[in-house]
Amino acid sequence: MKDQRPTVILFVIFFVGTVLLIKLFMIQVVDDSFMKRAENNAIQRVVDHPYRGLVYDRNGKLMVFNNPIFDLMVVPREFTLTDTVRFCTLFNVSKEELIEGYNAAKNYSRVKPSPLIKQISNADFARIQDFLVDYPGLFIMTRSVRAYPTPTASHALGYIGEISATQLERDSLGYYDQGDYVGLSGLERYYEEELRGTKGVKYKMVNVRGVDKGPFKEGEYDTISVAGKNITSTIDLELQRYGELLMNGKTGSVVAIEPKTGEILAMISAPFYDPNQLTGAAFGKTFQKLNVDASKPLFNRPIMATYPPGSIFKIVQSLIGLQEGVLTPETTFSCNRSLVACHNHPSPVNLFGAIRNSCNPYYHQAFRQIINREVSSNTFKDTEIGLNAWREKVLKFGLGSPLGVDMSGEKGGDIPSSALYDRIYGSGRWKYSTIYSLSIGQGEMQVTPLQMANLAAIFANKGYYYTPHLIKEMDGDAKKIPAKFQQRHEVGVDARHFNLIQDAMAEALYGTANRAVIEDLVIAGKTGTAQNPHGEDHSVFIAFAPKEDPKIAIAVYVENAGWGGRAAASTASLMIEKYIKGKITRPELQEYVLAGNFIY
Image (tube, helix red, strand yellow):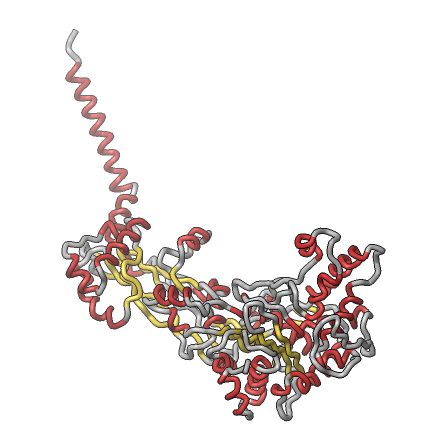
């Protein structure tokens, strides 16, 4: 039989060659994926970061704008370095910082760009741009940081910073990349999606040295960035600045609200900081310094600090008592100091006199009648039922839970329920004598300064409020603000009951806060002294004005400043005058507040 091995070998060679030719045809003619990969090696994808929206005050004054900065981006796979010393000298970076930045970029991705040196200034960029061609894998990305023409309202406005790994993981839409900046607090955080805008992308051709050779396919695949929406805030810049002047060197907060709308006119947390400090390359070091400061300048007191409301809560007690029919304007109690301490004033007093003179024994007795309604034969059970019913009425005043302001981190305070006292004392082992301190706004009750300013707005509006908020318009359209800020909340007390309350609050200034009296402007207010077991008591005051047509409601807390009729009432009075009249007619009172010697 003739040997067929050469034929078989030729057949195998022919078959393999045919397969290779077909594969080559598929690669070169039919399948363009390899061509695309080759193109990708010469195409650089550059993200065009949009400018964040601007922020204005309620009168159109610019509060926040953008400053351009530059990030040096690196693609680790393409980056080579032969002279480290020269590179560090040119780019003004230490060897340790260079290694740390490169390793972070490499760990993120070897083929995707990420920041190597962040937030390069305009001057430094002008100096280094001609040297970039010497370093393959490097290119510049333009970004922007926030800037503040007037260094004020730092807690309300908030700040932006580099996105964290945790935030990146939560980004289900994949909008953000490593190194992106996001809002971290205040308005910047709450309205991040509106302020951030929409990214654009540009594709450009580069040679092996990274030199820009122009747009890829004449920009066919490029998309333009869209700037973020501009926000008009509710803040009155001049009032905010004046309030910060008055609170400089003190600890506490001021919140001023327009009662008819819930718009926040001023939100001051003292001590405060210059918001320009938390921008640019020094952000990390400055943030760490502020974060460890014992005075807690980063702590947003208007929405995070909680205190006992003190005597101011007597107004809420009065309204609940009137609505329930437990109290009437003629209800009279003696100032029995064996029940609870009080200051000197005529006795007995009716409800008007109790508010005017802030009579503690009056509210001790009134609260007992509100709580112990004799709905049960068991005294302990009767107190429990009465307390829970009372609590439900108090909650309608916006206390005991966050109001829903457009800021993150808002605390809700606490209005105690029977469950709390069951945990402390045991079920059926407490009664009115255990909780009577609630009658005058002390004990386990806690509120925030924002909630107290909202109470002042409720008293001004005779029974309703709008959720306090910091946004007035978005892109010039008031209809774009969240609907929840236009929803009216009723507190469940008839408007007629507020007439006596407003009259008594106006009269109270002459009894407990005569420093707050302004000529030709009727203010309705109430002092408070929040007990502080760690030192001097806190000075508290709420008010609204003008009484007949309220345009501002305000709450002031000055920590460790003693009696409410001094520090808090004086500060509130000056701010009201500044807002209503546009000027200060009592320079001696202003000097008193600026000096800050309230205890002596």
